[in-house]
Image 1 (cartoon, rainbow, N blue to C red):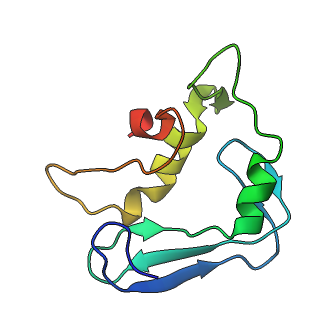
Image 2 (cartoon, one colour):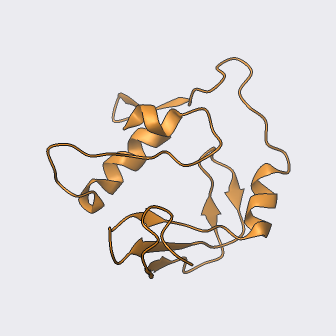
Length: 116
């Protein structure tokens, strides 16, 4: 495997301790995941196995009331989307720069991009 951004080498930085994970649309998976960091550019990425993707998309439906939008949940009386929470939890891993280029690599409606 190589980095999706710069084709650099990858280092595994996190492995699920239990066979359990949650997809971005809150689907509970009985499969673990691994997280990789690029040694060259620092980009964090995951490469889900086919059985993980099959579980996620077996019964996948978009929100018919709010297409391409995430549900907002309240955290300490403050409404936040899952993507915004992801951003908050990832800030320590994102390089501190005046400007930053981001690629939202996926097949969704751009909710992660909007959160950033």
